[in-house]
Length: 569
Image (cartoon, rainbow, N blue to C red; front, side):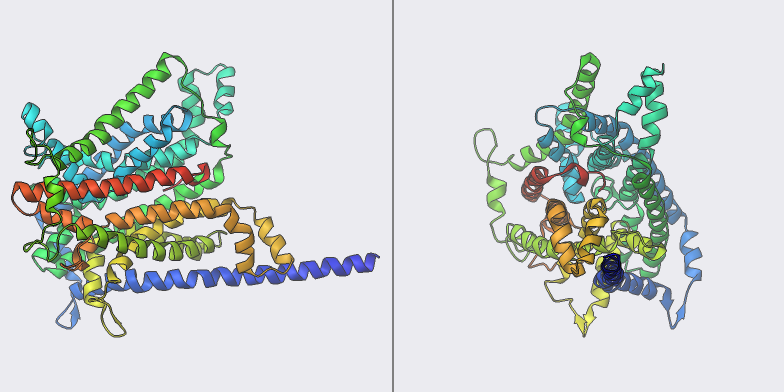
């Protein structure tokens, strides 16, 4: 009997070791396609355009780096890029942290809808954000009509738009963790005599610090690489690195200068992402979390109701007001006795011989088709990458994780222009192919898929996979039987985020979208670049349509949302 038991145990161990070996090999295999995708459609175009800018007359001109950085106007761009990102980050944290607390700890009617509403700006194209603020604080905007106040072409317009755009990053990143912190630890400190402020400062704040740092770094990253917002609201007086790269590339055709600025941005983004990865690891390993539904409750007392009211007022003024004015301007046409009607929407269906070769309304259908294909690519690549990253496996895998985040910070202008100059020869002659736009959009969608899927996959008990391997299941069958039933909701959420982000991608698409197949963000930008009330009204109408599509997508995501999927962006 003992001999038989020993043989069975040894056989199980052998199958477990074999399954573990196959699992390790499978994880390496899972990384193959994402690595190839990023090497071919990200690293290759970016490297090629930088090399073309620095390799002149048969030799490398590295002295060009010091020449460019020595120019006073370039130093001004670097300084403005840095300080406006710092100011935007500080202002966003100041305004959004109370909102993170309210969404984490309070339960109130309409919470799910409001969570989706505050997330809408984050997935809107930056050109739409700029358009909304033009309608509010620009020439002829609401503030101009009521009080004669204009803030466009000022730094305040840029800072406010950045807070509008990044409010959800803090609410979802910090609030996602805050909602899972055990409140009994803070209550224990108060029972020992600590004041409310002391208990929060010594217990809750240290626990939140990694999430706050991660949110701050992400906001800094998005504002450091800001393009559409600065281009539309800043005017010629303000230029970030991204705007300057676009100007040097598309307008001045000065590739050497653009290459140097791309390198500077690449180094800065790499440093930010390295620090962000460190804060994420601290957040994942240092805390014991509880079910979020167990700690939320109705506000109690005048102070909590006042805080909820202040957060609601902030959301109304900062987020709903710009979006509402955008919608109002889209109906501000010549129809009706009060000049209110659907004239601008009807004009979208008319043939256009200027900025477009097709009626602007076709941009909606183009964008939806591109976004669906880009979402499929992003879910495939991001899902495989998240599965490969499920078990931490040393520096190589951590480096791969950081690589997946680079498209969020590296110049989309550089990526788009790099597509044009690299993917134009066999066997990858894609410059005239429709697939080029979804490929560029998928690069931005993949990081969101990974960040959404990874916490959920890591929460799956590894012993279940081990048991499946012991019983002889292949890695694919183990994933299908163990992981998929637990992560399918997160997969839907990842697909929704990828769809919304792909729908709004602008920086790379503006280079590669053909005039007869414009996307919605490209169409809005072109209409804003043309004089006349009709073009302005059509831009407002298209922006409103895009905003509604994004809002509906996010409301559907909220229905599928689980608390485990809100800890990271």
